[in-house]
Amino acid sequence: MDIRTVGEFGLIARIKNRIPGLFPQVLRGIGDDAAVSFLSPGMDLVSTVDLLVEGVHFDLSLMTAFQLGRKSLAVNLSDLAAMGARPLFALISFAAPSHTPLEFVDDFFAGFGSIAREFEVSLIGGDTSSSPDRLFLSITLLGEGEREKLVYRRGAREGDDVYVTGTLGDSFLGLYLARSQKGKPLVSGAEFLLERHFNPVPRVKEGRSLARENLATAMIDVSDGLYSDLSHICEESGVGATLWAEKVPRSAPFLSIISDISGGDRNWSLKGGEDYELLFTVPPEKRQRLAEVAKDWPCGVTLVGKITPSSQGIAILDEHGPLDPAVVKGYDHFI
Ligand code: ADP
Ligand code: MG
Image (tube, rainbow, N blue to C red; front, side):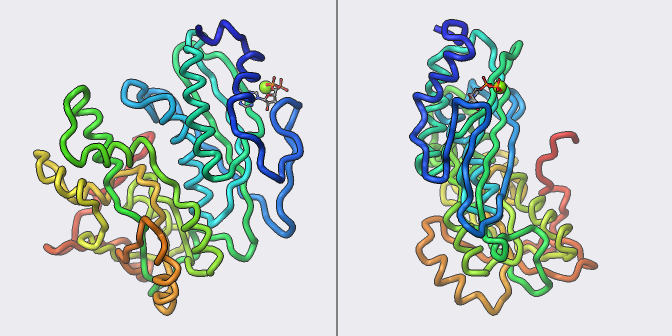
């Protein structure tokens, strides 16, 4: 059975029946001309949207519909995490070819629903269309945050420490393995890296505590690559940075597998995108407090650099001296 069997309205009903119930703050969800919900008293609205195009952002020969459903919400959750906001409501629009199997749609929404439940997000609406040959998805995520606490890219100051959560490069290497080892048995550690690429965990709780505790002066999620995303913070804040390449946290599977890849380089962890970790700056006098707050983060946190005057630009140092930024530039859709 494919989408033609149920039609547009049958499809919407099917989606509605398959997603978790609504959390408080939603007065009217799917089924009206527009959804109605409210923010907690005194909170500001924080909004983000992401567009995912089959063949550009995802490859259905490499990932399941369930994984796609989870990841499509995870990347938006990561954006709100990077603001220190609390996610609340999602809207999903998609255009799918009419021959798309209903099983695909069901699995997608099972994945979407599973992560929505974990992060207490309500799916409150969307839009549906046919598409001639490929899947397009757009997810809007709305959340809330305290005006004085939200964290922007623009707040980094000279002397601040630069931190990242988790480990970097896993997702990039996971995708590399998925493409190059397709159909072959997995080497040890590969499963972890694939999971990091296809099922990233947004650092919502961590972003919220950094905001709540007034620790981060600037924050971004690592979606394009560490070097690229640090450049965004530097540009917005009008500062420079020194990044210590040797300090960049790498997982054990990353280190063991990268050494077996011809041309593989540990510094892939500075350019690889889609880690969805948080990159943030903290004044040095708050080091102790950060350590206390981060004590119960399963992902951990690592000091990787320092904010410098803007005249110094971004310097990357490894044990041999300065690294050429050209080798660690991240992804750009149009270049
Ligand atoms: P309209 O013609 O006013 O845009 P629709 O028929 O597109 O209305 O949508 C009817 C209801 O179903 C709305 O509440 C809308 O938000 C919801 N909806 C439509 N498509 C989706 C979808 N893909 N996922 C979730 N809700 C959807
Ligand atoms: Mg519509």
